Length: 283
Image (cartoon, rainbow, N blue to C red; front, side, top):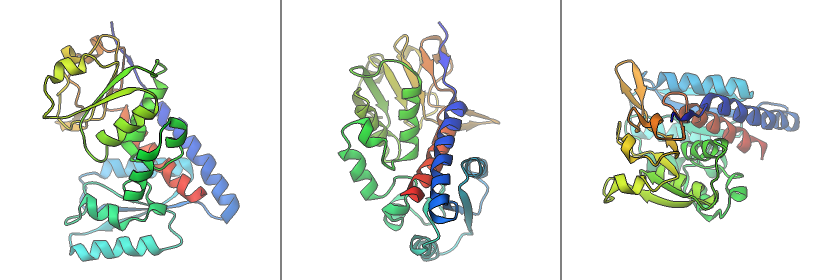
């Protein structure tokens, strides 16, 4: 059996069309396009991701303004974030990773107001997410982008979800934990596992939906996968001139559906960020 590969680019196009509808509604109401401010370090380590985000913004008719930061005092970066937070012409704000030197995830969460938080990283966004009991409630919120991408891919896979078992490998604040909660709003029974979890292979083999988000290249071996399972790979690792994920080669011979790397979770995550920027502008 060979898994059906999930087309993340096609799903991203659908999500960007949703964003464009919101953008046009905002333009009609206010006379201008939604404006997204993107703060990025001046180095080129994530240039390709930034270019993809700018292309997605253009497709969704969201105006993107990039603020590049050269290495400097932490206070300078926080000052820029404060200025953007206070700027009425800015509808949404994203701080690209890797963060500018001296800036932490906690700094970003504190500096970006919930009303402009396109990445769902603020404490208020987190609180609203974990209060959501079902997908109807959760899907209206601004949430961490990769977590939203994983949930949208699970829905797009067109497999039964309610009552099935899901295992999420990885407990990060930006992916694993919010993804586990979003999957629970889809009525999956979710286990959140991590590097200290005992018996990971056996645990994974129980999963009808397996999310690999541990940040460890090739962690999930084919033998860990239940035959016919839906496998979502959120890992991104550069090996030579290739991108690979947390799922090892050969998984397609056991999985029923599989998100590839590249072309799976990545483009959907980018589209989710732009959708949420448009959603903030449309409120």
